[in-house]
Length: 303
Length: 303
Image (cartoon, rainbow over all chains, first blue to last red):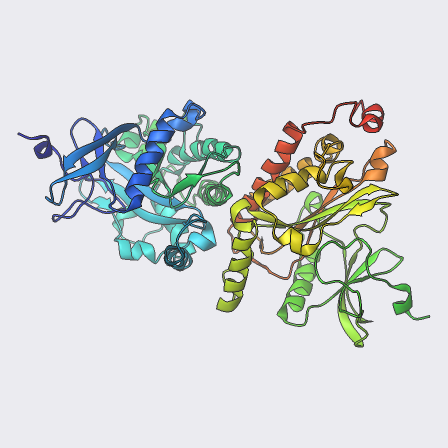
């Protein structure tokens, strides 16, 4: 049995190229590794170079490093499209230990292109930034899945729908993401059952984003264009009254450039906007009475 | 004697259209008013509408309102170019009580155009944003004057030079702005004599910018495109050991649009970048020994 036989397409990928139907995409193994094929153009090289430099950069504090996937080097692997050996980044699989992860991929920044980009690339990105919420909100949702129940499975809107999200859609989806009735169709008001546990609290998503924000107010090493923050939690853990494994991770570094002593004001602005959106869900969850979410309220009363 | 006869072009204007040689520009009177001619296209109307709405908006806290010029309405006045009556915004003259104001006009935001702008306007602004430091730094210097002494007067670099400022030039100019040897030619290292008094301290520029930043992290009423923050202080007051009248003011609201419940992530990002630049001057003023600036050190020892 070759290594390739034990690998499969990641079941919880919500954005990016997918290893399905013989297409080139990432793979995972049972040991918790995520193999991301190096993109053919210079993007692959750049992302590899970023991970290599970042891993050995001693000025990154540990409380920030934890927001990045662990990097295990690059490796030649049989590609998912059967085209033969292809170089892959070997990364930490961020959801390998999860039962039923709810995940949202949010591309941060109103501008997704570095200054030094070729003119046609700038035009392509600028058009996308204007068509999506990037320019208006400072971020855009690139993908998501929200766990409903064993019966209903995940709510995972398709990519075309996500690309058309308006500011109001984003507001709604950020509520649905922490609701127990997200998969029950769009007719229901999101109950925001998990808002206080997932977004709030001292270890919640907001607290982690604020930690990241504090770093971005200071760090002048990197500018992260077209980089995403993943929001992850596990609803089954929440319902069991255990830690709900809330975490944020930064991913996608093919367009990271040197900061040259300037803060990444583009990323920081978008991050602050996202923080404000999430704060508003917490301030007015609109529901979350004991009646609406008895199972959560009972077990998490002291949190 | 008509009202027009008591008016003159403002002596301390550092950016924008100027009322000189029969051109249309702002005027001031002896009572501390600044008359800004309404720009002919819709910009004038928009700026007037902003001032009117802002003046009566009760949700603006007083500690933020103080960063905006006081608005006294609009008035038909004989224009500075002699073309007859023209509508003017009547504003507070921000430097009428100053002896020898040092002033810097900094346009905040990496993007100076609102989303809703016409395509040719976007292209024009985007080109300027890329040619100047707006895109790279999140702000650009639009004009400045630094007081040297009664003999040397002001150092006031010309507009063409300012437009070409690189990131390194900006770093240097932010040091020169608080130096006693700024006007003595570019050969000298700026002594940063006034850095701790002007940028630092509980009432200094950094403290005021941080107050503004906190508001921008929350406010979702307005988005301020192409708006400037003025940094103002009075060197003669510093040398006399008195309060040096350090203040910041926001100006130029022809491109303010409604925030629609979203924070102004573009302004906020640029503001954070400027804050970082000024912090660095404070952290490493490179000079400011008692030897370099005896007159300041003696009188401000306890500050």
